[in-house]
Length: 190
Image (cartoon, rainbow, N blue to C red; front, top):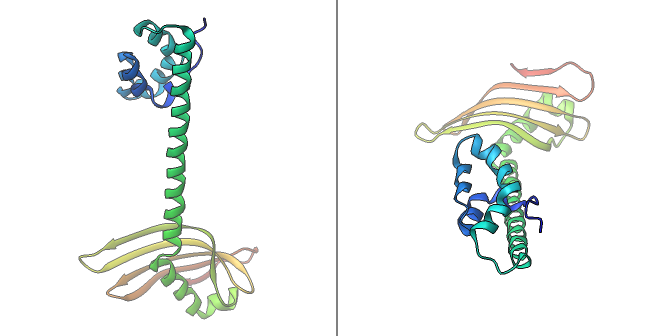
């Protein structure tokens, strides 16, 4: 019987597996660095052997069946975790793209004659957006630094903008257009 086969469950759910099998050394995974990097590898290669010694299994077939169930559960839980993480990222991107800040930014851009002259109307966001948004509710003040790809009826490019919103009044501090072609940067506010 070969018990030293690599068991994947020990890379992800090592301490839970250790409690279930009485392999208390699995708690070493909580030691910073060593536990997170080295101990899962050690458990992956030696865990089956230790679990076999600790528990009274009737046969190796029963033991391997139990380990197979643990592996299936680990893969399923990992899949659920990954799916939740992916959905959270998609939801966060959706919230950013449909936020009032993004709508206000596009409103500012679409009202600017130079931007409309370059892009054409309407100017819309094209792709992902990056930047920072900070909001101070006690002073009713927001500071926005945003960069995104934009597309209009004539051209495409990247817009970089910084503005402050104080009591519903917007002050643009920086507004640059980086044309997709080799044209010079269009500086609207610098």
